Image (cartoon, rainbow over all chains, first blue to last red):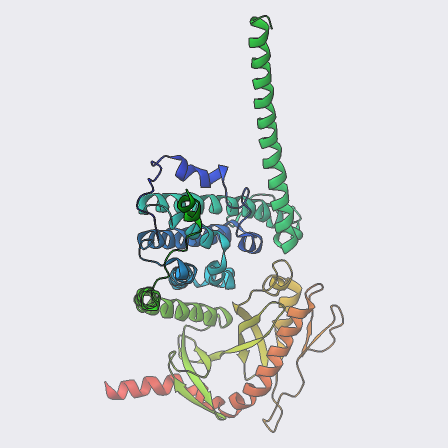
Length: 226
Length: 239
Protein backbone atom coordinates (compact mmCIF):
# COMPACT_ATOMS: atom_id res chain seq x y z
CA UNK A 1 0.00 0.00 0.00
CA UNK A 2 1.10 3.59 -0.56
CA UNK A 3 3.07 5.25 2.18
CA UNK A 4 1.16 8.40 3.23
CA UNK A 5 4.20 9.96 4.90
CA UNK A 6 6.25 9.93 1.68
CA UNK A 7 6.04 13.31 -0.13
CA UNK A 8 5.34 13.12 -3.85
CA UNK A 9 7.52 15.00 -6.39
CA UNK A 10 5.78 18.04 -7.97
CA UNK A 11 4.12 17.81 -11.38
CA UNK A 12 6.32 18.84 -14.33
CA UNK A 13 5.96 18.63 -18.11
CA UNK A 14 8.78 16.07 -18.07
CA UNK A 15 6.26 13.51 -16.83
CA UNK A 16 4.46 13.79 -20.18
CA UNK A 17 7.39 14.38 -22.53
CA UNK A 18 9.68 11.68 -21.10
CA UNK A 19 7.62 8.89 -22.66
CA UNK A 20 7.49 10.62 -26.02
CA UNK A 21 11.21 10.55 -26.69
CA UNK A 22 13.71 10.53 -23.77
CA UNK A 23 12.25 7.32 -22.31
CA UNK A 24 10.46 6.13 -25.45
CA UNK A 25 9.13 2.63 -24.68
CA UNK A 26 10.28 1.20 -28.04
CA UNK A 27 13.45 3.07 -28.99
CA UNK A 28 14.87 3.51 -25.49
CA UNK A 29 13.28 0.95 -23.13
CA UNK A 30 12.71 -1.71 -25.84
CA UNK A 31 9.37 -2.73 -24.32
CA UNK A 32 6.38 -4.35 -26.05
CA UNK A 33 8.36 -5.34 -29.14
CA UNK A 34 5.99 -8.18 -30.13
CA UNK A 35 3.26 -5.91 -31.60
CA UNK A 36 5.94 -3.47 -32.76
CA UNK A 37 7.37 -6.10 -35.09
CA UNK A 38 4.12 -7.87 -35.93
CA UNK A 39 1.59 -5.21 -36.91
CA UNK A 40 3.71 -2.38 -38.29
CA UNK A 41 3.42 -3.44 -41.95
CA UNK A 42 1.26 -0.39 -42.65
CA UNK A 43 0.65 3.04 -41.09
CA UNK A 44 -3.06 2.29 -40.61
CA UNK A 45 -2.36 -0.88 -38.59
CA UNK A 46 0.38 0.89 -36.59
CA UNK A 47 -1.87 3.81 -35.73
CA UNK A 48 -4.76 1.54 -34.72
CA UNK A 49 -2.54 -0.64 -32.53
CA UNK A 50 -0.89 2.46 -31.02
CA UNK A 51 -4.20 4.13 -30.17
CA UNK A 52 -5.61 0.87 -28.76
CA UNK A 53 -2.51 0.63 -26.53
CA UNK A 54 -2.90 4.30 -25.46
CA UNK A 55 -6.50 3.59 -24.41
CA UNK A 56 -5.54 0.50 -22.40
CA UNK A 57 -2.47 2.17 -20.88
CA UNK A 58 -4.27 5.36 -19.80
CA UNK A 59 -7.40 3.62 -18.46
CA UNK A 60 -5.52 0.86 -16.61
CA UNK A 61 -3.01 3.31 -15.10
CA UNK A 62 -5.85 5.61 -14.02
CA UNK A 63 -7.69 2.77 -12.28
CA UNK A 64 -4.53 1.30 -10.71
CA UNK A 65 -3.58 4.73 -9.38
CA UNK A 66 -7.09 5.43 -8.07
CA UNK A 67 -7.19 2.07 -6.25
CA UNK A 68 -3.55 2.02 -5.14
CA UNK A 69 -4.36 2.62 -1.47
CA UNK A 70 -6.86 -0.26 -1.40
CA UNK A 71 -4.91 -2.96 -3.25
CA UNK A 72 -2.86 -5.17 -0.87
CA UNK A 73 0.72 -5.73 -2.02
CA UNK A 74 0.25 -9.50 -2.09
CA UNK A 75 -2.44 -9.45 -4.83
CA UNK A 76 -1.34 -6.35 -6.73
CA UNK A 77 -0.06 -8.10 -9.89
CA UNK A 78 -3.21 -10.25 -10.16
CA UNK A 79 -5.35 -7.14 -9.73
CA UNK A 80 -3.37 -5.19 -12.34
CA UNK A 81 -3.75 -8.05 -14.83
CA UNK A 82 -7.54 -8.16 -14.26
CA UNK A 83 -7.73 -4.39 -14.80
CA UNK A 84 -5.57 -4.51 -17.96
CA UNK A 85 -7.50 -7.51 -19.36
CA UNK A 86 -10.77 -5.63 -18.81
CA UNK A 87 -9.68 -2.66 -20.89
CA UNK A 88 -8.21 -4.92 -23.59
CA UNK A 89 -11.59 -6.69 -23.86
CA UNK A 90 -13.31 -3.31 -24.14
CA UNK A 91 -10.94 -2.12 -26.87
CA UNK A 92 -11.50 -5.43 -28.70
CA UNK A 93 -15.28 -4.81 -28.84
CA UNK A 94 -14.81 -1.14 -29.73
CA UNK A 95 -12.53 -1.89 -32.71
CA UNK A 96 -14.99 -4.53 -33.98
CA UNK A 97 -17.71 -1.90 -33.78
CA UNK A 98 -15.59 0.73 -35.58
CA UNK A 99 -14.28 -1.44 -38.43
CA UNK A 100 -14.37 -5.20 -39.03
CA UNK A 101 -11.70 -4.87 -41.75
CA UNK A 102 -9.30 -3.25 -39.30
CA UNK A 103 -10.16 -5.84 -36.64
CA UNK A 104 -9.37 -8.68 -39.07
CA UNK A 105 -6.09 -7.04 -40.08
CA UNK A 106 -4.90 -6.66 -36.48
CA UNK A 107 -5.89 -10.26 -35.74
CA UNK A 108 -4.84 -11.68 -32.38
CA UNK A 109 -2.57 -8.74 -31.55
CA UNK A 110 -5.43 -6.74 -30.03
CA UNK A 111 -6.02 -9.47 -27.44
CA UNK A 112 -2.27 -9.76 -26.94
CA UNK A 113 -2.07 -6.16 -25.64
CA UNK A 114 -2.87 -7.78 -22.29
CA UNK A 115 0.63 -9.29 -22.16
CA UNK A 116 2.40 -6.15 -23.39
CA UNK A 117 5.06 -5.65 -20.70
CA UNK A 118 4.91 -1.86 -21.21
CA UNK A 119 1.39 -1.72 -19.74
CA UNK A 120 1.99 -3.96 -16.71
CA UNK A 121 5.40 -2.30 -16.24
CA UNK A 122 3.89 1.19 -16.04
CA UNK A 123 1.15 0.02 -13.68
CA UNK A 124 3.69 -1.53 -11.30
CA UNK A 125 6.50 1.01 -11.62
CA UNK A 126 4.56 4.27 -11.87
CA UNK A 127 0.77 4.20 -11.40
CA UNK A 128 0.91 2.20 -8.15
CA UNK A 129 3.19 4.84 -6.60
CA UNK A 130 1.88 8.12 -8.01
CA UNK A 131 -1.23 10.26 -7.94
CA UNK A 132 -4.10 9.83 -10.39
CA UNK A 133 -3.28 12.93 -12.46
CA UNK A 134 0.42 12.17 -12.78
CA UNK A 135 -0.29 8.53 -13.69
CA UNK A 136 -2.72 9.51 -16.44
CA UNK A 137 -0.37 12.14 -17.91
CA UNK A 138 2.62 9.78 -17.77
CA UNK A 139 0.58 6.96 -19.39
CA UNK A 140 -0.58 9.35 -22.12
CA UNK A 141 3.03 10.37 -22.85
CA UNK A 142 4.21 6.76 -22.87
CA UNK A 143 1.29 5.66 -25.04
CA UNK A 144 1.84 8.43 -27.56
CA UNK A 145 5.57 7.63 -27.59
CA UNK A 146 4.69 3.99 -28.31
CA UNK A 147 2.30 5.09 -31.11
CA UNK A 148 4.95 7.40 -32.56
CA UNK A 149 7.45 4.53 -32.70
CA UNK A 150 4.89 2.20 -34.32
CA UNK A 151 4.00 4.82 -36.96
CA UNK A 152 7.72 5.50 -37.66
CA UNK A 153 8.20 1.79 -38.34
CA UNK A 154 4.91 1.38 -40.21
CA UNK A 155 5.60 4.41 -42.42
CA UNK A 156 8.97 3.12 -43.64
CA UNK A 157 7.69 -0.44 -44.09
CA UNK A 158 4.57 0.59 -46.04
CA UNK A 159 6.52 3.06 -48.18
CA UNK A 160 9.22 0.60 -49.19
CA UNK A 161 7.07 -2.54 -49.05
CA UNK A 162 4.11 -1.25 -51.04
CA UNK A 163 5.15 2.18 -52.40
CA UNK A 164 2.22 3.71 -50.47
CA UNK A 165 1.49 5.76 -47.36
CA UNK A 166 -1.88 5.37 -45.62
CA UNK A 167 -3.07 3.56 -48.74
CA UNK A 168 -2.15 6.45 -51.10
CA UNK A 169 0.34 5.68 -53.88
CA UNK A 170 3.55 7.66 -53.22
CA UNK A 171 6.01 6.07 -55.64
CA UNK A 172 5.17 5.59 -59.31
CA UNK A 173 3.50 2.35 -60.38
CA UNK A 174 6.84 1.27 -61.92
CA UNK A 175 8.26 1.01 -58.40
CA UNK A 176 8.96 -2.63 -57.54
CA UNK A 177 7.90 -3.06 -53.88
CA UNK A 178 10.46 -4.52 -51.46
CA UNK A 179 8.22 -7.35 -50.28
CA UNK A 180 10.64 -8.20 -47.45
CA UNK A 181 9.70 -4.92 -45.77
CA UNK A 182 6.11 -6.01 -45.06
CA UNK A 183 7.24 -9.47 -43.94
CA UNK A 184 8.52 -10.16 -40.38
CA UNK A 185 12.22 -9.68 -41.32
CA UNK A 186 11.32 -6.17 -42.51
CA UNK A 187 10.20 -5.35 -38.97
CA UNK A 188 13.61 -6.29 -37.57
CA UNK A 189 15.48 -4.46 -40.37
CA UNK A 190 13.52 -1.20 -39.93
CA UNK A 191 13.62 -1.31 -36.11
CA UNK A 192 17.39 -1.95 -36.21
CA UNK A 193 17.88 0.89 -38.69
CA UNK A 194 15.88 3.36 -36.57
CA UNK A 195 17.84 2.35 -33.44
CA UNK A 196 21.12 2.79 -35.31
CA UNK A 197 20.12 6.23 -36.57
CA UNK A 198 18.73 7.45 -33.23
CA UNK A 199 21.73 6.19 -31.25
CA UNK A 200 24.14 7.72 -33.78
CA UNK A 201 22.58 11.18 -33.33
CA UNK A 202 22.33 10.73 -29.55
CA UNK A 203 26.04 9.86 -29.36
CA UNK A 204 26.97 12.73 -31.64
CA UNK A 205 24.96 15.09 -29.43
CA UNK A 206 26.58 13.70 -26.26
CA UNK A 207 30.04 13.89 -27.86
CA UNK A 208 29.41 17.50 -28.88
CA UNK A 209 28.32 18.41 -25.35
CA UNK A 210 31.41 16.74 -23.83
CA UNK A 211 33.65 18.54 -26.33
CA UNK A 212 31.97 21.90 -25.62
CA UNK A 213 32.26 21.26 -21.89
CA UNK A 214 35.97 20.38 -22.22
CA UNK A 215 36.60 23.44 -24.43
CA UNK A 216 34.90 25.82 -21.99
CA UNK A 217 36.83 24.23 -19.10
CA UNK A 218 40.07 24.73 -21.03
CA UNK A 219 39.25 28.42 -21.76
CA UNK A 220 38.50 29.10 -18.10
CA UNK A 221 41.77 27.45 -17.06
CA UNK A 222 43.76 29.49 -19.62
CA UNK A 223 42.15 32.77 -18.55
CA UNK A 224 43.09 32.00 -14.97
CA UNK A 225 46.64 31.37 -16.15
CA UNK A 226 46.62 27.78 -14.91
CA UNK B 1 20.83 1.48 18.38
CA UNK B 2 20.16 -2.25 18.08
CA UNK B 3 16.44 -1.52 17.51
CA UNK B 4 17.25 0.93 14.71
CA UNK B 5 19.46 -1.66 12.97
CA UNK B 6 16.67 -4.24 13.09
CA UNK B 7 14.01 -1.87 11.73
CA UNK B 8 14.56 -2.44 7.95
CA UNK B 9 14.21 -6.21 8.41
CA UNK B 10 10.85 -5.85 10.07
CA UNK B 11 8.23 -7.84 8.08
CA UNK B 12 4.99 -5.85 7.60
CA UNK B 13 1.90 -7.62 8.96
CA UNK B 14 0.19 -9.88 6.42
CA UNK B 15 -3.33 -8.69 5.48
CA UNK B 16 -6.15 -11.08 6.27
CA UNK B 17 -7.36 -13.56 3.63
CA UNK B 18 -10.72 -11.79 3.68
CA UNK B 19 -9.03 -8.53 2.69
CA UNK B 20 -7.20 -10.21 -0.23
CA UNK B 21 -10.28 -12.08 -1.47
CA UNK B 22 -12.57 -9.06 -1.14
CA UNK B 23 -10.13 -6.86 -3.11
CA UNK B 24 -9.93 -9.40 -5.94
CA UNK B 25 -13.70 -9.92 -5.82
CA UNK B 26 -14.44 -6.20 -6.00
CA UNK B 27 -12.02 -5.64 -8.91
CA UNK B 28 -13.44 -8.67 -10.76
CA UNK B 29 -16.99 -7.35 -10.28
CA UNK B 30 -16.01 -3.92 -11.57
CA UNK B 31 -14.32 -5.63 -14.52
CA UNK B 32 -17.40 -7.74 -15.27
CA UNK B 33 -19.66 -4.69 -15.09
CA UNK B 34 -17.52 -2.72 -17.57
CA UNK B 35 -17.23 -5.66 -20.01
CA UNK B 36 -20.99 -6.35 -19.99
CA UNK B 37 -21.77 -2.64 -20.41
CA UNK B 38 -19.55 -2.24 -23.48
CA UNK B 39 -20.57 -5.67 -24.89
CA UNK B 40 -24.26 -4.80 -24.73
CA UNK B 41 -23.62 -1.40 -26.31
CA UNK B 42 -21.44 -2.68 -29.18
CA UNK B 43 -23.30 -5.96 -29.89
CA UNK B 44 -25.90 -4.51 -32.35
CA UNK B 45 -23.23 -2.36 -34.04
CA UNK B 46 -20.93 -5.38 -34.55
CA UNK B 47 -23.85 -7.49 -35.86
CA UNK B 48 -24.75 -4.72 -38.33
CA UNK B 49 -21.10 -4.46 -39.47
CA UNK B 50 -21.04 -8.22 -40.07
CA UNK B 51 -24.31 -8.06 -42.01
CA UNK B 52 -22.99 -5.22 -44.18
CA UNK B 53 -19.73 -7.11 -44.84
CA UNK B 54 -21.70 -10.20 -45.96
CA UNK B 55 -24.05 -8.05 -48.06
CA UNK B 56 -21.09 -6.38 -49.81
CA UNK B 57 -19.50 -9.75 -50.51
CA UNK B 58 -22.75 -11.25 -51.91
CA UNK B 59 -23.28 -8.44 -54.42
CA UNK B 60 -19.60 -8.52 -55.35
CA UNK B 61 -19.68 -12.22 -56.31
CA UNK B 62 -23.15 -11.87 -57.91
CA UNK B 63 -22.81 -8.54 -59.77
CA UNK B 64 -26.08 -9.03 -61.72
CA UNK B 65 -28.12 -9.40 -58.53
CA UNK B 66 -30.21 -6.54 -57.20
CA UNK B 67 -31.81 -8.47 -54.33
CA UNK B 68 -31.14 -11.69 -52.46
CA UNK B 69 -32.66 -14.35 -50.23
CA UNK B 70 -30.96 -16.40 -47.53
CA UNK B 71 -31.38 -20.17 -47.36
CA UNK B 72 -30.37 -22.74 -44.77
CA UNK B 73 -28.99 -26.11 -45.80
CA UNK B 74 -29.91 -28.67 -43.18
CA UNK B 75 -29.78 -32.47 -43.49
CA UNK B 76 -29.79 -32.41 -47.29
CA UNK B 77 -32.69 -29.98 -47.53
CA UNK B 78 -32.82 -26.26 -48.37
CA UNK B 79 -35.23 -23.92 -46.64
CA UNK B 80 -35.77 -20.18 -46.56
CA UNK B 81 -34.08 -18.53 -43.57
CA UNK B 82 -32.87 -15.14 -42.39
CA UNK B 83 -29.37 -13.80 -41.72
CA UNK B 84 -29.62 -14.49 -37.98
CA UNK B 85 -30.20 -18.23 -38.54
CA UNK B 86 -27.30 -20.39 -37.36
CA UNK B 87 -25.97 -23.12 -39.66
CA UNK B 88 -24.85 -23.57 -43.27
CA UNK B 89 -26.25 -20.53 -45.09
CA UNK B 90 -26.27 -19.87 -48.83
CA UNK B 91 -27.50 -16.72 -50.56
CA UNK B 92 -29.51 -16.67 -53.80
CA UNK B 93 -29.30 -13.54 -55.96
CA UNK B 94 -32.12 -12.21 -58.16
CA UNK B 95 -32.18 -9.46 -60.79
CA UNK B 96 -34.66 -6.58 -61.02
CA UNK B 97 -37.26 -8.92 -62.62
CA UNK B 98 -36.82 -11.46 -59.81
CA UNK B 99 -35.01 -13.88 -62.09
CA UNK B 100 -32.46 -16.13 -60.43
CA UNK B 101 -28.85 -15.02 -61.24
CA UNK B 102 -26.75 -17.34 -59.07
CA UNK B 103 -25.71 -18.33 -55.59
CA UNK B 104 -23.19 -17.04 -53.07
CA UNK B 105 -21.75 -19.86 -50.95
CA UNK B 106 -19.44 -19.81 -47.90
CA UNK B 107 -16.20 -21.82 -47.89
CA UNK B 108 -13.35 -22.05 -45.39
CA UNK B 109 -10.05 -23.91 -45.10
CA UNK B 110 -6.80 -23.72 -43.13
CA UNK B 111 -4.31 -21.45 -44.91
CA UNK B 112 -0.68 -20.66 -44.02
CA UNK B 113 -1.37 -18.50 -40.95
CA UNK B 114 -4.98 -19.20 -40.04
CA UNK B 115 -8.32 -20.22 -41.54
CA UNK B 116 -9.15 -18.43 -44.80
CA UNK B 117 -12.87 -17.73 -45.27
CA UNK B 118 -14.34 -16.95 -48.69
CA UNK B 119 -17.74 -16.31 -50.21
CA UNK B 120 -17.88 -17.57 -53.79
CA UNK B 121 -20.28 -17.12 -56.67
CA UNK B 122 -21.78 -20.32 -58.13
CA UNK B 123 -23.94 -20.77 -61.20
CA UNK B 124 -25.77 -24.10 -60.66
CA UNK B 125 -27.10 -24.24 -64.24
CA UNK B 126 -23.64 -24.13 -65.84
CA UNK B 127 -21.79 -25.63 -62.85
CA UNK B 128 -19.32 -22.74 -62.80
CA UNK B 129 -17.63 -21.07 -59.85
CA UNK B 130 -17.41 -17.48 -61.05
CA UNK B 131 -15.30 -15.62 -58.49
CA UNK B 132 -15.00 -15.00 -54.78
CA UNK B 133 -14.55 -12.42 -52.09
CA UNK B 134 -12.29 -12.92 -49.08
CA UNK B 135 -14.25 -12.61 -45.81
CA UNK B 136 -11.34 -13.38 -43.49
CA UNK B 137 -7.66 -13.88 -44.12
CA UNK B 138 -4.49 -13.24 -42.15
CA UNK B 139 -2.19 -14.67 -44.83
CA UNK B 140 1.32 -13.29 -45.35
CA UNK B 141 1.22 -9.89 -47.07
CA UNK B 142 2.84 -10.08 -50.48
CA UNK B 143 2.38 -13.87 -50.71
CA UNK B 144 -0.88 -15.34 -49.41
CA UNK B 145 -2.73 -12.08 -50.01
CA UNK B 146 -2.08 -12.50 -53.75
CA UNK B 147 -5.27 -14.60 -53.97
CA UNK B 148 -7.13 -11.31 -54.18
CA UNK B 149 -4.76 -9.46 -56.52
CA UNK B 150 -3.00 -11.94 -58.84
CA UNK B 151 -4.72 -11.57 -62.23
CA UNK B 152 -3.57 -14.99 -63.51
CA UNK B 153 -4.91 -16.70 -60.40
CA UNK B 154 -8.21 -14.84 -60.54
CA UNK B 155 -8.57 -15.92 -64.20
CA UNK B 156 -9.04 -19.50 -62.90
CA UNK B 157 -12.45 -18.40 -61.68
CA UNK B 158 -13.91 -17.06 -64.91
CA UNK B 159 -15.59 -20.46 -64.95
CA UNK B 160 -14.09 -23.06 -62.64
CA UNK B 161 -15.80 -26.36 -63.40
CA UNK B 162 -17.81 -27.58 -60.39
CA UNK B 163 -20.51 -29.58 -62.21
CA UNK B 164 -22.53 -32.20 -60.35
CA UNK B 165 -22.85 -35.75 -61.77
CA UNK B 166 -26.13 -37.18 -63.15
CA UNK B 167 -26.90 -38.98 -59.90
CA UNK B 168 -26.57 -35.64 -58.10
CA UNK B 169 -24.34 -37.29 -55.51
CA UNK B 170 -20.97 -35.55 -56.02
CA UNK B 171 -18.92 -33.38 -58.38
CA UNK B 172 -18.00 -34.95 -61.72
CA UNK B 173 -14.38 -33.88 -61.26
CA UNK B 174 -12.43 -33.24 -58.09
CA UNK B 175 -11.41 -29.56 -57.93
CA UNK B 176 -7.69 -29.35 -57.25
CA UNK B 177 -4.85 -26.88 -57.34
CA UNK B 178 -1.99 -27.75 -59.72
CA UNK B 179 1.56 -26.41 -59.93
CA UNK B 180 1.87 -22.99 -61.62
CA UNK B 181 1.78 -23.32 -65.40
CA UNK B 182 0.54 -26.94 -65.53
CA UNK B 183 -3.25 -26.37 -65.63
CA UNK B 184 -4.91 -28.47 -68.37
CA UNK B 185 -8.54 -28.89 -67.30
CA UNK B 186 -11.26 -26.39 -66.35
CA UNK B 187 -11.63 -27.97 -62.86
CA UNK B 188 -7.97 -27.34 -62.03
CA UNK B 189 -6.65 -24.19 -60.36
CA UNK B 190 -3.31 -22.83 -61.52
CA UNK B 191 -1.41 -22.10 -58.28
CA UNK B 192 0.34 -18.79 -57.57
CA UNK B 193 4.10 -19.24 -57.71
CA UNK B 194 5.42 -18.50 -54.19
CA UNK B 195 2.13 -18.89 -52.36
CA UNK B 196 1.21 -22.51 -53.00
CA UNK B 197 -0.11 -23.10 -49.46
CA UNK B 198 -2.84 -20.48 -49.83
CA UNK B 199 -3.53 -21.55 -53.44
CA UNK B 200 -3.93 -25.17 -52.26
CA UNK B 201 -6.22 -24.01 -49.45
CA UNK B 202 -8.47 -22.31 -52.03
CA UNK B 203 -8.59 -25.51 -54.13
CA UNK B 204 -9.35 -27.69 -51.10
CA UNK B 205 -12.10 -25.41 -49.80
CA UNK B 206 -13.86 -25.25 -53.19
CA UNK B 207 -13.70 -29.04 -53.54
CA UNK B 208 -14.92 -29.61 -49.97
CA UNK B 209 -17.74 -27.10 -50.31
CA UNK B 210 -18.61 -28.33 -53.84
CA UNK B 211 -18.76 -32.00 -52.84
CA UNK B 212 -20.93 -31.23 -49.80
CA UNK B 213 -23.27 -28.50 -51.06
CA UNK B 214 -23.49 -28.53 -54.87
CA UNK B 215 -25.42 -31.87 -55.06
CA UNK B 216 -27.98 -30.54 -52.53
CA UNK B 217 -28.24 -27.29 -54.52
CA UNK B 218 -28.78 -29.26 -57.72
CA UNK B 219 -31.64 -31.24 -56.11
CA UNK B 220 -33.33 -28.06 -54.86
CA UNK B 221 -32.63 -25.79 -57.81
CA UNK B 222 -36.30 -25.21 -58.63
CA UNK B 223 -36.98 -23.99 -55.11
CA UNK B 224 -34.06 -21.55 -55.30
CA UNK B 225 -35.15 -20.23 -58.69
CA UNK B 226 -38.77 -19.63 -57.79
CA UNK B 227 -38.43 -18.61 -54.15
CA UNK B 228 -38.37 -14.88 -54.87
CA UNK B 229 -41.45 -14.93 -57.09
CA UNK B 230 -43.29 -17.18 -54.62
CA UNK B 231 -42.40 -14.88 -51.76
CA UNK B 232 -43.62 -11.89 -53.71
CA UNK B 233 -46.83 -13.77 -54.58
CA UNK B 234 -47.41 -14.60 -50.90
CA UNK B 235 -46.90 -10.97 -49.96
CA UNK B 236 -49.34 -9.95 -52.73
CA UNK B 237 -51.97 -12.34 -51.37
CA UNK B 238 -51.54 -11.14 -47.84
CA UNK B 239 -51.82 -7.52 -48.99
